[in-house]
Length: 465
Ligand code: SF4
Image 1 (tube, helix red, strand yellow):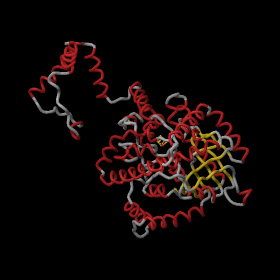
Image 2: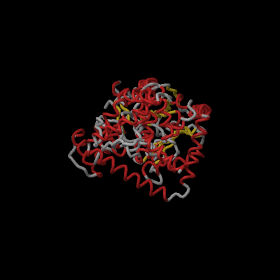
Image 3: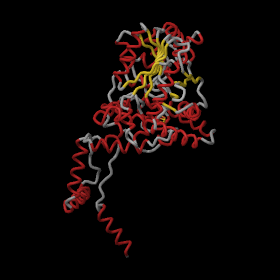
Image 4: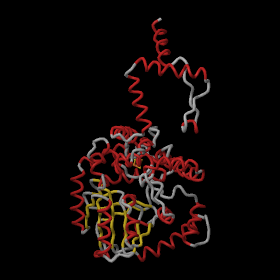
């Protein structure tokens, strides 16, 4: 599935017409909101945790170079090979090189948005390496040749019936919509692949600088099997994932599951610090870490927008967003979606390709209130909108409108006429004027026959008398 952020308006229109999709997304997000709220209520120091996480992330971003160097050094001390990738292409080449050097034919992956960002599956499959997603949601969207529609629930846009149909059509199994049966089918298919895989690829939720460790939280144990069974493991992580030490980890481990799935704690917390096979006789023989920049340094250089790198990909802002609730994740046209996605799209893809994204928001602020690390998303969206206007990438009709308004504002007589005339015209035609596109979905008000200026002067007079 090839999506483009430039087509977001088309995707939104399509999504709004799709009742089944809207129903599935609405149900899933409302359930997630409720579960999260229930858990938050049980944690009296929730706001304190949010402030703490924000402060830790700020401190990490301000000293990221030092933490990255420490992380690299500790990894090397532990026998982990560290690779630096400036962009997606470099990351792909590094992983291909590791695969070739180890004669890798099959790869199992655990859920990783960073590998989605670099289109790793497509690249590996094109290079004759069988690549299989093992998180249940990711497995389903891979069968459909789609990308995830949510940061933590990749198949959130699908119902049980949809999943039953996908399994029936793609795996040739009998149709069922029973969750336990669907789970058993997926488990049987995936177990064979885990046992046969030469290489495991994961992302990371956090990376600990002080010890050179990668932390992956999960519920399904697929990450555990991805890390533990194949002889080679590769963890791909964005450079912003660092935490100074294990002391800062508990705050994140508390905030993430509550915000993501409404759980007090995830079922598994995997910590990878070294290739274990030499020590214990099991686990990977080699561990590689690919540190991905892919535009993050540029974001880091902006003192305000670097806050968007604080994101721990919990998905709470997506669930809270009234727009996401209506259209789901594919409508945004890129791997990061929802409120945080629309801040990242122009920053990663540039003002040209990402010019529509920051406008897919009502700026209601629900995302900011839901965010466990207190990222002020509406504030950043305003800055990004400003940058898009400055770079000249706004719509023609908007540019013409603003130019006309600026011209009128500099010519008071014309301005007065332009604001007086529609009111008079409205008297002759008492119904709302047609506005193509706008009035298709909603009513346009009528022009006031007096106009703002007249009313304003009348008010002033009234105050004085
Ligand atoms: S911006 Fe905040 S709420 Fe949204 S995914 Fe990131 S951490 Fe979660």
